[in-house]
Length: 230
Image 1 (tube, rainbow, N blue to C red):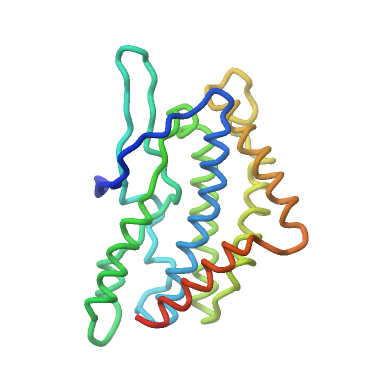
Image 2 (tube, one colour):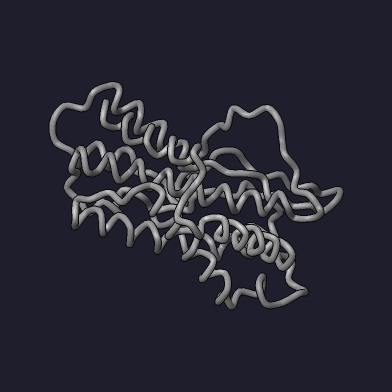
C-alpha cells in the first residue's frame, strides 16, 4: 500500500554529518517520539474504548510519511526521509470503531496525530536501510506487546516506565543484532550503527536511577491532560 504523504512545514534541511552524530540524534529522537505516540494512543483507546485490541490502531509498518528523501545524481548521495516511528496512527479506523458522537476537537486531534506519527528526519540511505531497520522491527514488537497489555488490563503504564523499558530493550536488541550494519565494518551503515549504539548506551546509563528528564515527564503529563479534556 502506498504511503500517505504529508507536508512537514519545515523550511530548512538538516544534512547528515560525517561523524554520524546526527544519526545518533535521530535514534535518540526515535525513542522519545515513539514513546509519546504510544502514550497518546493508549490514552485515546482507554478513554474511548474502540472495538478492536488497541495495537490494531497503530500499523505494523509506517503508512504515513512526512517529507521526502533527496537523491543527487551528481554526487551519488542518497538521503532518505527516515521515520521516527515505524508505525502510523490509523485515525479513520479508530474513529469508526468508537461509539458515540465524534466531536470536531477529537477528530482534529486524531488527524494531527496521524500526521505526527509519520514524522521523519533526513538520514543517509545506508543508515535508513541498515541500523534503522533493526530499530523498525523492535518498535513493531514493542508497540504490539505494549498496547496488547494496555488493552487487556485497561491500565496505562507511567510514561517514564515505558520510556525506560524501551531504551533498555532497544539496547539489548542492538547488542545481539546480526545485521551487517552491526557486524560488518564494510557495511555502509556500520559507522551509523555504532554511533547510535554508543549514544543509546550512554542514555541507558543516565536512566539507571529510574528517572527521566523533567521535560519528558512534563510531556507525558500534558498528553494525559490533553486527551482527558477531549
